[in-house]
Image 1 (tube, rainbow, N blue to C red):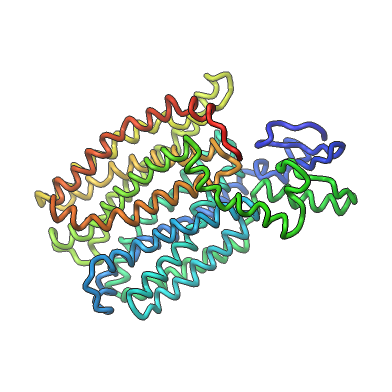
Image 2 (image 1 turned 30 degrees about the horizontal axis):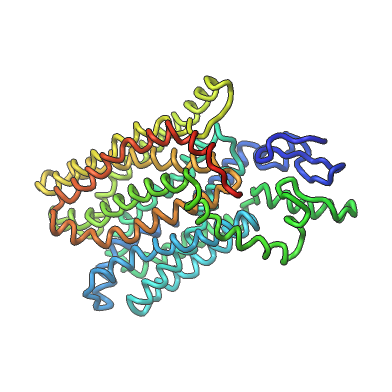
Length: 487
């Protein structure tokens, strides 16, 4: 079947010109044409691992004090690093996993990284000192980062733009809710079974989910699938000149290790390339990183507030994160119900032409909720009001964070669907770096300013950031179209 549509959608086979593509726009081998039930199942698999990885980032937070006591640690920085060291792994892992998933496939990279993640959870459980624990936490973060980047690629592989809102809501549920449930459950485990069992639980749950992904997951990367098809047709038809429609020439997809090596360097720098050269990725990543840093600054205060101010035990203090959890859930529901519908409506108004900036039309509304929490939570904790008041005060931030995170991450995927994993990696790297380093300044900031003015400072920062999504929405299209990237 000769001819092709847009190269990044359904490039079709044209053997007369030596091009291997899909057998038609309805080719069942194309992941975009998988039955919806199969698409949802694959997203559920990836989402399950994407829940346990962010869950692992914060589940140890309530158990830090017990580890510090066992290892006779007096430095608060070392204790904090045993938690945030995991996020430093999030900075490192995407540099490798996202480009490799675009080159070798989502399935093999995700399976290998999951194995790495589970293996070093065992190391955490058996760590002989705080230094070893920090190193092992870093390595588990490296392995756990793969799902955060390959998931964006899987969404781009499976769904057209008008369906990505709901898919993103499912996928990011674990990313946003996992860090909230972590301290809640971690407090009970650490106090009742000991901090070592926090990691044994991660080994059991993470190992089970990783095994399911290995068995039932399916490759979705269009470029890799077409490379496999090209190699098969070369042998079957004895036509070595055939090349994939996703590659520019015969040499690009030539079978063999040397061809992979020749392009590996370019792929490995793709997250940095997009972060530095793309006028879309850099401001989006910076904006999300700032919000993510504020979120982890909040995390540094919640346990202390409810243990010292309200006299709660370690296990009960984790329940304070329910305010964030309720906000995340309601935000996910609101986003899932509105995003794709608004996209379809705006597309019809635009002569049925989709523009990625349509995704941002609701972002400003969510951004209005973010500053509310800092003033509400901060001053209610400072004035020692009833414990329910600061808990409820955490909800608006979580509600707003969901909408902003989902819309902006999907926006980047829409802008660069073929390099969705690298674009996602660029955002994971920046926000994880901010989430790992900013909390180190939290204790001193709150000691100097108190919970009221300390959180108010963050509130003023996020208040000043409200117009940023509006700027993306109004001018992002012009900037995107005027930029030229060598992809």
